[in-house]
Amino acid sequence: MKACAPRILMLGTAPEGRGGVAALVAVLRGSGLFERAQVHYVCTHREGSFGTKLRTAAGGFWQAVRACLWRPPAIVHAHAASHASFTRKSLLLWLARCAGCQTIFHLHGGGFRQFATLESGVLMRRWIRHTLERSSLVIALTEGWAGFVRSFAPRARVTVVPNAVPLAPASVHLAEPGRVLFLGRLEAAKGVHELLDAVALLAPRFPNLRLVLAGEGDPAAWRRAADARGIGARVELTGWLDAGARAEQLARAGVFCLPSHAEGLPMALLEAMAAGKAVVASAVGGIPEAVRDGAEGLLVAPCDSAALAAALARVLDDAGLRARLGTGARARVAQHYSTEAVCGRLAAIYNDLAGTR
Image 1 (tube, rainbow, N blue to C red):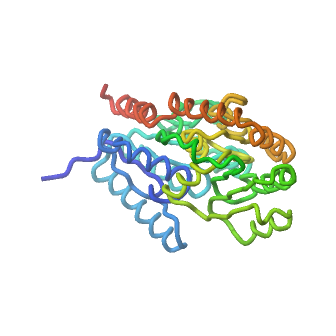
Image 2: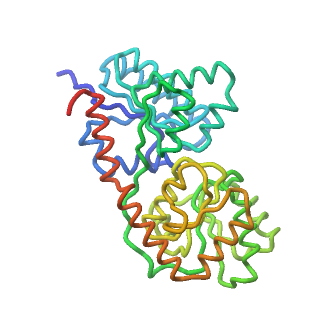
Image 3: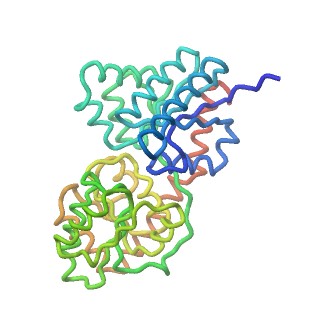
């Protein structure tokens, strides 16, 4: 008997991998959405050596091509960011349209605006605009990103579906008040230099202050950067953390800090909010839509170490403020970023595009 075509073909990075797309896909899969909506997932990227990445990209590309040509699904849903990610997914979405499929371009990554407007040449900009406008639907993570897509590709059909996280058990009793947690890739664009500067400014005032830098990067380089600022003994470099270790670090944190220069809607931020942590973050990308200044966290301008230090000092100095912000953050996730709400929204989109209500 010939197998039935999957209703939804979803393309993205390996769910067990690292980064925001992997985390979101893992959440969607874990929620049961794949079974309910008949989603077949094809991995087009995997962390590892160049050979591993190349084999995964080639294998995923061939699986998607074969699916579109042999048993076309109703919808092809691609999670895409910039550069190579965009190139792979845009070609597959073009093929899917040729095969008569509905297509969803799901935009991730805080660097997409720069990629589309500054880093790409004339022909690539036209191809980006064409891909966005010819997609059946573009999903943006925030209203701000949706506004950018509409301005860059005026004929695109755009909707907003935020990232989702499960509501973690409250862990306030485990928190260490002076412990500041950063979760993310350790690189300058994430504001790690400014965070180290801020901790150096605050160290004389807060003897119990500790900074945990959790994520991929060059640990030796960041250790040297901490030592150069005289705070090496206060900085813990954990490397990349799996889900269990990440939950443990979130439970111990007194404050979560993400001073990025650019962002989409970071999963680490939502995870910290779901864990009931007070947030100090830069007001970039979709962060101000998730974190209202003074309600769920404190927001500062990017690339401003002094402002970051001042915001951290306010939260470290005031247990009542930490508790209020953490409670507000958890409630915000429960209302707007729960797996139930986001999966329900995606299911409705699938039904609409597939022509079934």
